[in-house]
Every structure is written in structure tokens, then in C-alpha cells.
Length: 462
Ligand SMILES: *Cc1c(COP(=O)(O)O)cnc(C)c1O
Image 1 (tube, protein in one colour):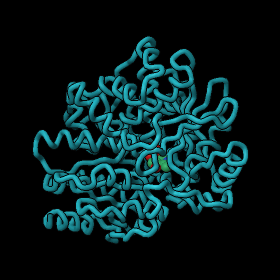
Image 2 (cartoon, rainbow, N blue to C red):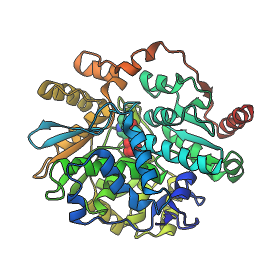
Image 3 (tube, rainbow, N blue to C red):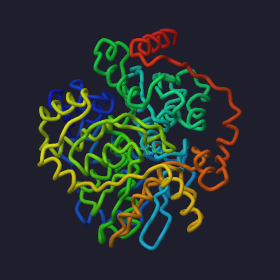
Image 4 (cartoon, rainbow, N blue to C red):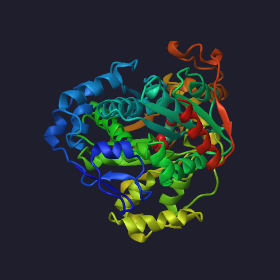
């Protein structure tokens, strides 16, 4: 199994190399050269199996032997042992044909734990073999940062720097990043928005002196291994509802397009998925692109679902690569146009994307009313991101069972939940004293050079 860049001008890599590299050296994202297909019988044989067994079957074909089978099974087992639900990703029912996939039972209470715990185990195993040290720099709209710190804190050969937009994450999200005490994890509050933070991370990868000097590695969803880990719960949930004998639909609260892109990979692998619905908040560039064929940014408007306050969705590049017939030069050209605000999709690409994805948006009042209504009808408390998903899913219910992804625990966003339904959800016991723990954070201007010199200094001190 080889991995190629969406911009067509970086070397082909193995799974292990693609995982440790993150962003390709031509600025592109790695994707598998061929998506392995599972037969109907192979999928049917997974019915009733544990999450871990399904994870092994789905991901093993992508490894190209980078980990032995027993070693990989051990890494999967360790990754999910800290989750506080035996099913790992349980389904609950919201309405006659509508189900919620609860992806918030991991240690930091968001779906990011599914991929980050596994990538933490896999990177550690790879580094143990070579004795190498790496520096992880990641941008977060709130949940990736804490999930990465949780996965890498205390490791001897990894230094982790997380850039988050100052003042634009929830207090619980912020504290999850500023309260770990291990000296190898660093929270950096940037005076900018998520798109700025993500652009700085990409710029660091494109600065080869810096990249090679600090041995930069990435854990944002530009990292293929993260997308891969997220393919698993599409299988586990669809199997629970009768796949492959019947098809299902999914609605996915979307920001950087990593999670829903994983769903499109599951479908390419043979899982019968009818519709994949992109749900956006008021930052609706993807919904507009799918309705109009024009992909233009118009500035991030902070919302009550902050993890989706994104206008430049990195992983959309992977979907564009397929929609443009895997033409790396065409993708390079589109991404250059992003620097001046956006681009218009070709007719062919627009058609392909609309065949692959449906979409909808949910504004702020609709988010609040969905939280209140869902609680009244079912007793389920939704986080605001999951509420965006449920609202959009309700407009797309059809003959097949609809599965909406619940991407975070409501207690991460107590203010929004309280506004919607009048009471504050409690944090689970392992985080009960979070609001009392001392914080450690460095505030930085929205300036690449300042961020790079701080990272260099901190590494030199260690
Ligand atoms: C990251 C995140 C999203 C968006 O997921 P993408 O893979 O970036 O599209 C949605 N909801 C929550 C709670 C998140 O943390």
C-alpha cells in the first residue's frame, strides 16, 4: 500500500512514512493510491464483533505490513481501553428512523480521541523502534488540542505544541489544554482565528529548514492515519443497524472535513452508505459550495459550536482530488486560488461532489432549539455541534436509517447547553475538578516567526 500527495509533486510514501510526515512536501495531503475494497461477505462477517475487532479488519489492509498483526491488535486494544463505554461508539435512538452515534466516551470527551489515542500509540511504537525525537505542532478549534495532549503527554521522545485561537474555545476546552502538568505539552493561545492557526502550522511544514530542524510531525486531520481511524465507527454503527444487508445514511457535523471524508472512504471500501450529509453551522462555506459550485471564504463568524468555526477545510482537498480525477496539478492550482479568496468548481467536479455528498446548515437559534427539543423528546442532551448535525439530519430523513454523529459531550459546552435548556450538564468524574486546576499557557501574536522562535526556544530548553 502506497500513499500519494493530492498535489502530485511529492514522493510516494509507505503508511509509516505518511503517518510521521503529516503534510506532503508539495503542500498536499497524502491519500492511499488505491482504497482496499471489502466484499459483502467480509463485511457481513464483522456483525456482532467488538469495536476493536472491527477496527483491526478495517484498518489492517492500509498498513502495508508497517505493524505486525499482533502488534497492531495490541495498539488498538491500548487505544480504546481508556474509553468509558464498552461499545466504544454506542448508538442511541432519537426518532423512528434516526439514530445518534455517541463518539464522546473517550478521555477528552470528543470524537477526536478515536484517532488521537491510536495515532499516539502508533507513533510511540514507531519512535521506540528508531529512537528518534519529534516535535508535534497542531492547530485546534478546541478538541484536537486536548485529545493530542492526552495521547502524547509524558512521552520522552515527543514535544507537543498546540495552537488555539485565543478567546474562541469554550472554557472547558481551554482548560483541558492548559491544565496538563507534563512539561512536554505546550498550549499556545494565538491572537487569531482557527484558520490563522491552521495556516501557521501549514507554513511551518512548508518551511523546510524549520521542519527538518525540529523534526516536525503533524496530528491534524491532514494526517492520513487520523482519517483512517475514523473510518472504523462508520462500519461499527452501520453493522449494528443491519449493514451490509441494508444501507444507511450518515449526517456529520463538519469543520475541517476529516470526519465526513472518513465516511466517504468507508463507502469506497464497500460499506453501503446511501447519503453522506455535511452539516455546517453559520460558517457554511461547504454548504454554499455544494449548492452553488463556488467555494469562497467570507470570514469566520464565532458560533456556539466553536469546533466547526472553520472556513478553510483542509480535508476538502482530498475530496477535490477525487472529484478532479486525481489531477494533482489541478488541485495545486485551486489551492493557489484559495490565497485570493476561493475558486469556482469545474462542472464535472461539482457534479461528482453533489453525487457524493448532500449538505445543510444550521444557524444559532436552530442549534439552541434543537438541543431543547431533543432533550424534551428523548432525554438526550446534545452538545451544540451534535445539535447542528441533528437539525440538518432531520431535513434529510428518508427510507434508510439515518445515523447522526454526536461529536462531543455536552459538558464541554455548558454555557450553550444552559442557554438552550436551562441546566448545566456535569463533567464526568475524571474531569470534575477541571475548573479548579492551575492553568499554564503562552499567549502569542498572530505571527508565524514569533511562534516558530518560541517553539525553537522551548525545544532547546528540554
Ligand atoms: C473537530 C470537531 C468537529 C469537526 O470535525 P472535522 O473532522 O474537522 O470536520 C465537529 N464537532 C466537534 C465537537 C469537533 O471537535
